[in-house]
Image 1 (cartoon, rainbow, N blue to C red):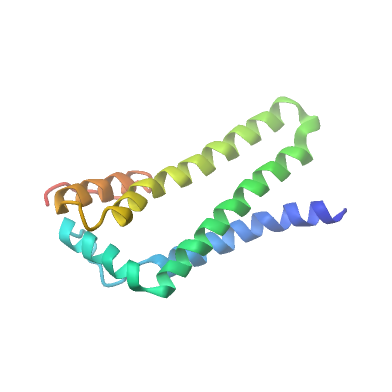
Image 2: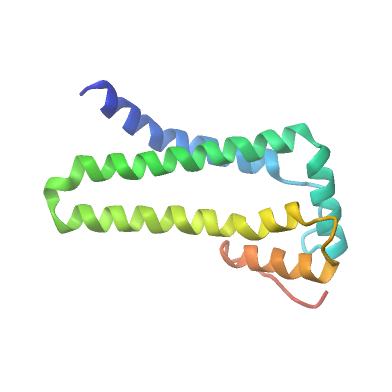
Length: 140
């Protein structure tokens, strides 16, 4: 086992740990279970001034990068398996793409929070929850 194998294997554990720590730091615990659009916009306004939650974003993005490295490492270790290695690579790439896709509505809300209507913020928040398969009622 060489240094690259160690880095590749470590990146899988780093992905798990960093993504969970970043997600925990990023959460706004003052937000209710089913927030209104105005509450969502206020939460992202608080995020803009909260250093701990901004660190959470950075840690989660580092975790995503570690996940991509791990997917590549698993492919290099299994490429002799033929189609199975390609299936693992495709599955890992799709998982990373879905993880990134689930963040795009939240990034949009964050960047446009001063110009966005509460209704649009609520709709984008519900869209990001679809990736997590949570209840996203639209009665607000």
